[in-house]
Amino acid sequence: MYNLLDGLKIIEASSFVASPTAGLYCAQFGAEVIRVDHIGGGPDYHRWPVTEANDSLYWENLNRAKKSVALDLSSPQGREILQELVRATGQFITNFPAEGFLSHAKLAEGRPDLITLRVMGWADGAPALDYTVNNAVGYPMMTGPGPEPVNHVLPAWDLISGAYAAFAMLAAIRRRDQTGDGSEVRIPLSDVAIGTVANLGGIAEVLHANANRPRLGNAVYGLFGRDFVTKDNVRTMIVVVTHRQWANLIHALGLNAQVAAIEAVRGVSFAKDDGVRFEHRDALYPLFEKAIGALDHAQMAVMLDEAGIVHSAYRTMLDAAHDPRLVGNNPMFSAFEANPSGFSYPAAGAFGTIPQMQRGDAKGAPRNGQHSEEILSSSLGLSSGEIARLIDTGIIGIAK
Image (spheres, rainbow, N blue to C red):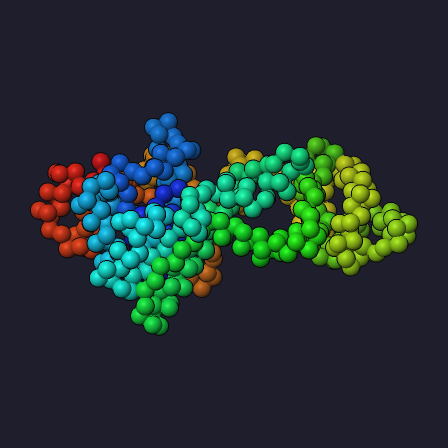
């Protein structure tokens, strides 16, 4: 945790991954992020993975460092309270529909400098999920050996959209500081996905070739990179990204003469051209399979580390969770016991490291409605009597 955004207050009304991620990243850098949900929790409140008591470990970690207000959002009065919270705060993150009671135009009535950050599915308002957007832009047809499409389990577009949304929120705030103008910023998952494809050259590539990229399995397109199996049956990914690494790799494996022989037969040089290595992978891969297959993984790892080669064995997520470098000794993680689920485990804080600042510990997630009374009193000036009445009538929810 860092306090770079100390003093910034944001209302968040959202669910699932992208929109809560935007709020999480702001909270990890010190913003006061107040998540507003329906009493009892929104549609993602019990999303898997869950504990035996049906507490969501997913929700618990996407909402760390936030505060929680619970309202009856099915009632006109509950919706009015959320609208007033947004107007009183001035910054709003949501993935609710663009029209309706949380439209920017309606919320900006009486608060023209309001900034609304809205995560969407498609730009025209149609719904979409990470997994359907990913299919739409073509990546499952490039993943794996084929011919079947392969969905990946990482919700990449949700996460990129959340990070982009947090950036866009701060950019809109900077503009408001300069001009006094509020605005709505819409972040459609479909645009983030296809825009990223374009930024990586994908649109230009397929139009230039008038064809799709061939399926490569675990090979890296345009580079010398693939998975190889060691003598003790450890599957390891090895990727060469510089010409120096290429030279060091073939030297470490004792393949200089054999690689030179291929160069002579095919009339090419691999020394300074990533693309040539990729194009002639049919001749190179068997050499490396044999050389790596004669080594134990531990022996090969030492050799590759000394040569500055990028490599990693394939591991399970449980393996990663027990890795000292990734988790146990990583200052990004804090041992956290006061989780709503009651389960103690390492909690991630801000991903960035600021050497000039002390990194604060990760903070816990709230229970649904844990801060309802505090926020409605401080932000809207409601009296304790009025809050008690709204709790009694079921408009406001509090943590139990």
